Length: 533
Image 1 (cartoon, rainbow, N blue to C red):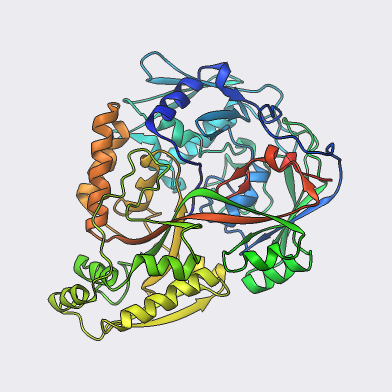
Image 2: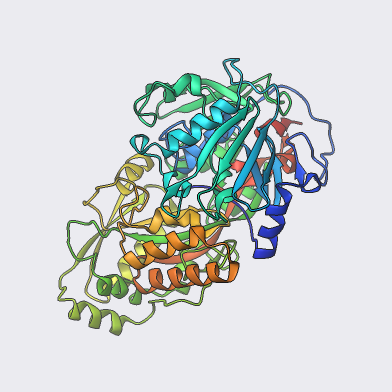
């Protein structure tokens, strides 16, 4: 699953970020475009934007969304408290976030006059409700673990209608990185819901972002309309429609015919789309890891053996795989660690298992595994995933392992791969964007976590993540996460392929691109800034 966040950052920048929370010199607001490039023509109001997405949204609730499509739509429906870009905070619903001298209490101030799409006021009560619902075990939030520090939950309280206090049970260096991922949801809508994730109220969401929900037709589109009372200023566009195009070839044809204004493009298709002359192609780093997910919960009963997972890696050649999938290193850098290079304490100096077929055969023999047949599920029409699967099929054949490639549509793929108990597949292509603090990755690699889709388990790794979340000394914290990276790599929990770049095609008829800010996962940070020229 994919979550969120940003570009390269080092510890010095994180320190600057923490300082920025209490400093007016390092903050901006959505309407402050200082430092951005200006468009040659003045923004105009009106018009409709059509964005291609590869599947139906899983859920229109930002605190339960983990797939790229849901997160992209939720970004327009729900405003965040703040965002971080290159160590600089842009405040949205929040007006400030300050830490006490001992960093044990954080005080969040909201902007005044905020409203939900239904006209109800957005206040501190909504923020407190949101945090407490995440902490409520019955609500099954994937973010709950990030709000448990040293085995104890943070405490959240209302100071007044615009002020919220967060009290830490101990030092929590990752708290701000967690808070940037949490988005307020309306208390008056959800307070009596026994299961927020499964609530039918998510089907007609009431948000606070620049666009409000209008219509959703399964398998076809989700349409949002302008929210005139958006605190960042009335958006320029009348509507934004997310057109569901599950087949990549159909999506590319729609781009060529001008039926889509914005869509992701694979390296293989980039020359064709650029050749139309109608789109600007924008490659950018999302801080994303592309990897082969190995389902240890598979009913084959052998992928939970470390030696077998290592053997699969030894059969492959990472450089060849990158060329097959991404054409060149221009769009991908070889990956070994589960942390991405923009993450604190990242190191690529860890164990890697590739390019040794003889060793692969030896390990399989030691594990007593013969005539292994694997099911590799990929998204139909996704040329990158298909190229990876076909390459793996070819290379594993050389070590006596048969791979059946199963192409299924995006919705079915998400349901299968991201299920908590799926046993009927073995391999898949996956990716994630988790942000600059390594604590965010704990949900992917700690035992029995709902977002641990590989079903990987190592008690030492669990302990390292727990200690790292509460360690305030940067050197000691770095040592903990370095050890975690080494253990996960040694266990071959996943097969990291590459840290990839994403290519977005944007219709040249639209302006405000710089002001809207290209953003990992969700394409743009603030669609209210886009307009038709």
